[in-house]
Length: 117
Ligand SMILES: [Ca+2]
Ligand SMILES: [Ca+2]
Ligand SMILES: [Ca+2]
Image 1 (tube, rainbow, N blue to C red):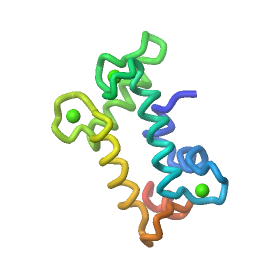
Image 2 (image 1 turned 180 degrees about the vertical axis):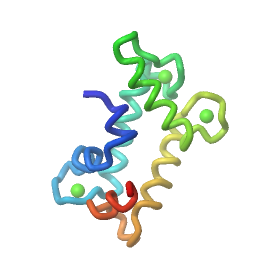
Image 3 (image 1 turned 90 degrees about the vertical axis):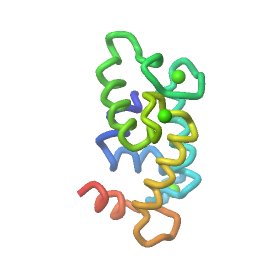
């Protein structure tokens, strides 16, 4: 399983994976847990930042590049080619708030779907 494509493309898939208590919605804490998982998967050398140094070998490189490029647009705020944990965390928090249309601190399937449309 790879974090890249599901994170970048498949919102329904993210919801399913992030909804650990299976109540049909992603709470802020579930989203935070999911964020950490995604970040640590992409941060292959575990130095607390995602950048080109974390590129895998040929096999996973395409997926990594795709995810990294998509993430950089939203998360690499200072455009230095590195996504630090705080950049990533801030961007994902902001994204959660943007998607949470009824502001109840939870993303349900409808909110995820609307956001993707
Ligand atoms: Ca849930
Ligand atoms: Ca790294
Ligand atoms: Ca940065």
